[in-house]
Length: 124
Image (cartoon, rainbow, N blue to C red):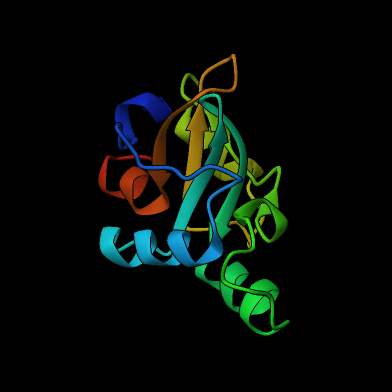
């Protein structure tokens, strides 16, 4: 049974809760990501997805200068780097994103886990 740390992607990119929705959307486009962790002082505070930007910002007519912190998913599903991958799979909700932020015990972002990583890596 592999640990999350053995399967996760390190060196992930994140945005600040103060980043504008326009800048976040541009970054997501440039980085080819549908979801980006939101961190403050290195700690995970949220997750912003393309859906968050579309539904919570654009559809409501918010200005492109609106901070990501106003539209992000607060306290998204996340896991610890020292958890077993099988444990993560057994606790996630079907609505959880395909990419999950990974944090250390101080809740600092250390990586992202793609649910496909564990399957390819011999997890559940």
